[in-house]
Length: 223
Image (cartoon, rainbow, N blue to C red; front, side, top):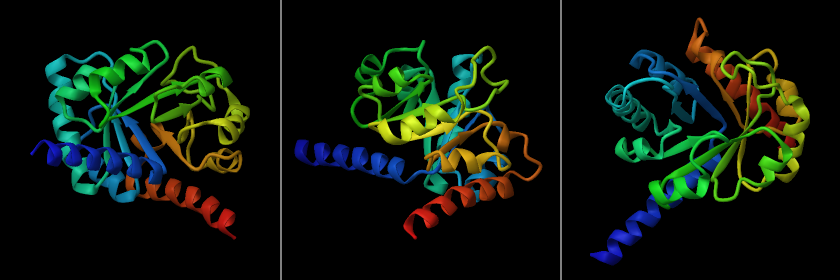
């Protein structure tokens, strides 16, 4: 039984990392309604990160249970922001950390080897120093109200990550259907978005447009 249990854990680890490697579109949002989640997931979102900065623990866990269920229905990964402890309680697929949050290696001790750990990066040094993270966010590419006071890094850091990142990276920060092409052409095959979907009149259609723009780069590269 111990061998079987260990094998099962290995399968979960491999499955999550395989799905991460195949992911292209990552949504960061607060506790949105079910209909919104179904729409963006049907539109092509691969990963959803629940980001509730100031909610009570019970409120976050209640939303997490809902997000986890809906993501599972669509075969998407579900991550929780900031708290490794809550990620374990919510049985999330992983946790995403900022530079000022719990260090990656300490978070790994909490969430275990089977869950994903992501890290936001804003400089070349942080991109190279993301030891222990399964993926990184690179940005903000453009100025964004979701990160007040954080200066945009522009496309140069995206180009650097495309050549130097040791793990999958998602360009993030003010990216939408109108400006995704330069980000894609700078080397980003994956993007994370917030307002491009949370403020969209038609979230499903907007998700499809973003996904299509990313796949266009894959087709060009394959040609």
